[in-house]
Amino acid sequence: MFPKADRVAVVLNGNARQVTDELVESFDQLVGSGDLFLSSSLDEAHGIALEIVESRYPVVLTGGGDGTFVQMVTAITKEARSRDQEPPRFGLLKLGTGNSLAWALGAGTSRKGVFADLARLRHDSAHRDFRLIEVQDLLTPFAGAGFDALGLKHFHEVRSVMRHLPWVGKRATGAISYAISIPTLTIPELALRPRMEVRIVNRGAAERLDQNGQPCGSPIERGEVIFEGACIAALVSTIPYWGFGVRVFPFADRRPADRFCLRVVATSPLHVAAHMLSVWKGTYRDEKLIDVYAEDVEFEFDKPTAIEIGGDPAGMTDSMRARLHPDPVKLIDYDAP
Image 1 (cartoon, rainbow, N blue to C red):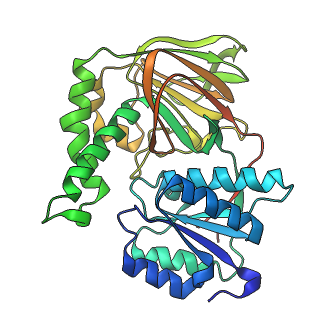
Image 2: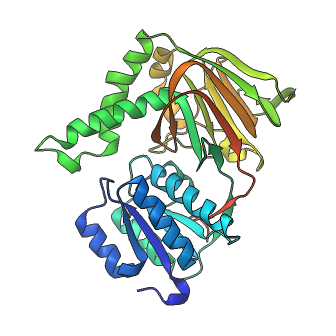
């Protein structure tokens, strides 16, 4: 058990595939039952956030994917700042499906790696200030509309079916569900239906990038339309990864600290499918791929459109605002010495 001076709150998503009874028992023995929280609903998450802030934990680890992190960091940060408290440091345990942020921070991928990450917190762990994007009142490393939101919808449908198969159940990985859903459901649906129509307006400082990720042209003025027309995806992110190590935002590694990446995919879904390997590696380039460093943009859709925030479906909307949050959060950096 951790000494009181080094208390760590661990919040696990009870709905995550890897969060088994055996895993919960192991965590319970390692961190102490009073410091382990199990959440299976949004209401429970808010109650846990309140308890963590009241107890003044210096470090909070979330296990269950990007969505779990988004919900907890949003609730805890808002509650702490409403009390004029310094928010705790946050870290991730790679126990969810996509784990995009865990990829960016170097969190362990295996069960052994997860426990090794947790064990490191017995000592001072390096952390870095990290800027998140505020989208629909949530703090997130990434969000978007179009391909990613539709892909998540199909992923959850396929995973739900696979989990009910008696010979598969929870043994089915998220990667398998994505491998089935993207080519068999998402790509065909995008190819057959009209593309998403969106108008993206700049509300802060912004600059366009060329195909090598270098700023080009004059700065984009406030109120200027960045993009208007049909596309298959409109995405924002402060990290390179979308999930499973897919480098959807290859220029995020060298973005300025006061910007996030905006990427509009105006190419055809079949063209993207044909270049899936280069998409995965982050080397996919096309003249209809629009990249921008921005700090505040507004999306206006021609009709209610599905969006995702932090890898979780976030409903339908006809508008979405993405703003770089002014206050960075402190994240445990597992790649640091």
